[in-house]
Length: 414
Image (tube, rainbow, N blue to C red):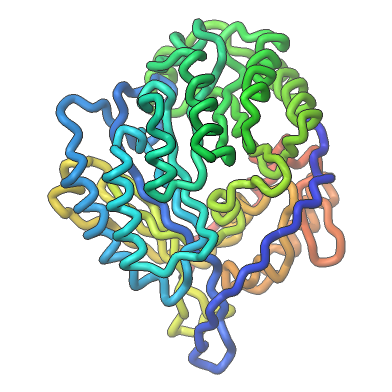
């Protein structure tokens, strides 16, 4: 893997609200985002393990937006006065919903939450589900960023992947995005496809770059449990060494085009890193609404544990019918023993790494809880450090799963 750590794009400054700790020490809450899940697709892709359901009847557009806003009513108190920095409309296929429906949703968000003046609002869209000319309407509804599921520019590979679009649809979508003033868009692109050569993988990258995206998510086709491909793998998938060769060649092309790697699968032009995903990887907070949505929120810990934070995760019913009926989800407090692994599983995805102060502020734990394990991984050559700043080395980035095993909890405590 090439070393993309020369990216010097400045980390944005955040203004965090302070919460009074019972013992007098201030607790600073992390930035806040909002994730909205849309669970329907025209057809379920054989590699997809997300909570998505093939649309077998008329889309319940009006009822689902109503249910989302009711869900947001229950989640809004967790904002605790913080302004939402980013909103991500994910799925499934959110672009099955009309611009008018999304405008209603976003207006409801503004009624219930404070949104940052420069809030980033991303819409996931598949080229096969967006009618030509609608991106201008989505922009008018409040969308500021779009993520297009291109996956490949080979029609043969798209057919094998179960996609409902052709490469020409992606090209038309990109043209329409630029015309609509939505030049800040991402292209999802897969590599390590069946029988894919280095030249074919690079051809996909070149085709993507010709569309002038601000961001590319470049990730390996993997066999996720519970998917059609896991049960019946397509023949011709490359082995680990073959996949690494494809990745290295593609990374070089992306870097030469000015898209620098800032996380495991994210490449962006200067100023175009995805703020929503950055909040995930920095262990920020996010409200999650919609069928199958997950959320993570911090609050002042009345027990005074660590630095005074309790971190809670929420999960909503996966079945859209149960969600539409108003069935509530589940909440659980993350045990203190799980927090080091959860934090590092996210922070070490970033080429920028993290600081000891970041760790303490976002987990409520002293840095000493991971200092020894990080030092051991540094001795193995998987971690680099400079002062109080830590990140995965080039080798550690390649062996991230092995690196993270050191931090798996051995016992659960609260």
